[in-house]
Amino acid sequence: EEEERGAQEERDRKDAENELKAAIARGDWDAIVAGRARAETLGLGAAVLQAADEALEQLRDAHEMAEARRIMEEAQAKIAELQRREAELSGAAHKKERNAIGKQVMALRGSEAFLSASRFLRDPEQERTRRRDRAAELEQRAAEAREARLRRQSEAAAEFASAVERCDEDAVRALLVE
Image 1: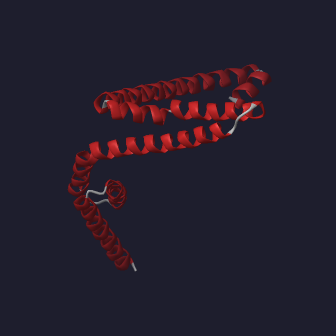
Image 2: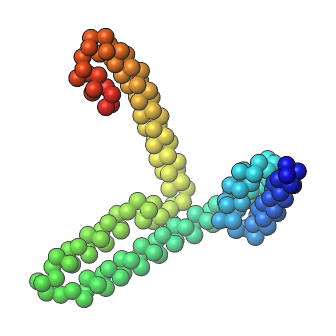
Image 3: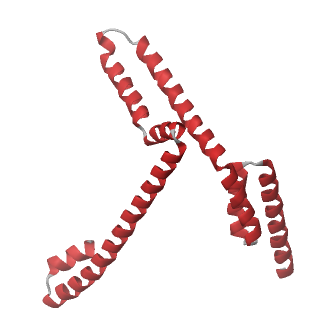
């Protein structure tokens, strides 16, 4: 039974490696990403993972450009449909509906995905830099929040011990809720 399981795992690893290599040969971004995740899960060697990373890096520009175009096309199609519906609604009786449609259009045009895709199509390198900076900023905020939470936990533990010593039921309840 143990040998059979080991043999099956080896077959799974070999299949995953072959599928990943085929995806790399085809230049299929999504299949490479999925195959790389599977390869990591199965513990394939570093050489296969490195080949996947190199293929993804080579395909990155084309993939990001296609993704930005897809986002813009979908948003523009939704906007066109909403504007068509808005044009059909005339008269004072449909004022609220027209306003609601106008808000939907503004929300689409102001969405982070739409704005990012638009900026990417205008200047890919500048948008990549902006995205990296934004990711670093978010990571910094998350690290600060983790640090503050850890500090507060240690402070709360000390406050809790003090409240228990003083028999301060309200403080104990508040700290337990916290």
